[in-house]
Length: 192
Image (cartoon, rainbow, N blue to C red; front, top):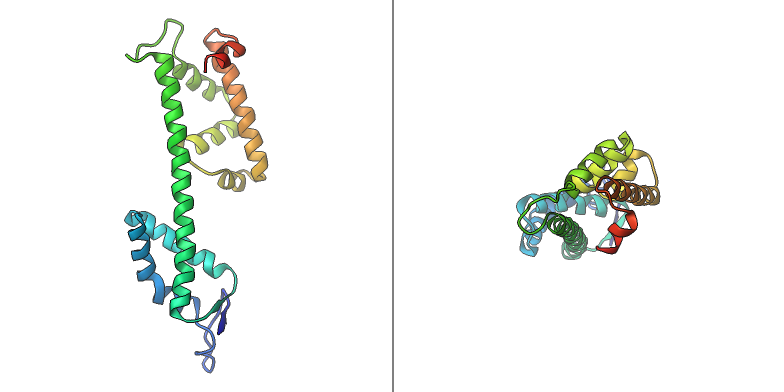
């Protein structure tokens, strides 16, 4: 049983005591990539998840019990990362479907805008009226699919702060859209 440190380096007399990170990656990279492909990852997703798996595994020390146990440990990490990726994409797909449903309902099935202007145009105008930080937040979260964690790092905020800011921006956008469409916010919320 050997403990592998994240920055384990082989010294001339210590080669058998602890494999280096490069050795672990070289030994398990191809098998891990094939495993991710068998789970259903695209080649690009398999590349990204494989790299992330090694980052997670090598971030802190773990006990190396042999090739089979290490491969199993890496597959477990990769499987969990794959499942997280799938969950995230489902949430994104659900958000997209919700947005399409709102547009469909507000424009009508034939795509004609109402005489008062379309909700989509009102939303676009309202987003343009946001200050720089709020507009960037909306763009990165909804258009680019950035996570709250990524946004927190980019904006120098805590993740809970990003969540709160998103809630406030959504409320402000809802009020702005309703005002542009000539409806009261209460009316707009009742027919959703």
